[in-house]
Length: 276
Image (tube, rainbow, N blue to C red):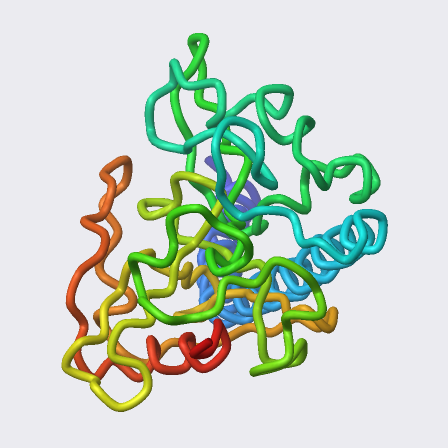
């Protein structure tokens, strides 16, 4: 091989070496940038989901209020016999239960369906990723929201004797529409029927008797969405770990458990109902 060819070979090898190094440097830079950007993107996604959740809550409460206006001020029952409740059906993790995944089963038969713009998406927080296996595939569950059990329920008084069960809009005197929640996102391993019960036993000054009957969701970074009778929505951050036990996918939580001195439950009780 003459000197000219040897020179060309050495030049090609050097160029090839530099190209590989440059490629590795670029890959390293991309990895560093990704590690910096992914948390920011995750936060942005979580924030967007929170905004959508707030919007869903407002739309559901608007539908609720339109129903009230059309029904002589009566609120839709949160729970009752048969179909005499705002939405029927019980959620679980059984794929054979169409209530979990088929909007035709219960959602489209809801008392509020005609008032919510035929939008099944507002019945569920966008951050709720719960699914069931049904008809040979994985399907998302259709509902995460539940109604305040103290709105015209047939079974709630056993969770706080002597407290008001609201049956009309005019009943919302204390704590008033701005302080009374109507809908909440309930945890995927807690939600079953259409009501979420906040136990009132021990309210306000016997904290040793406080309980968690049903569990609020914490889909937004240890926080969950609620909407109130005046139409506004909130994302509430929970502080007590007992309000947010570890999630075991596909396994239902034990409900109605003692939770003394749980200030998350006190916050909920403050915004649920009052003594008669």
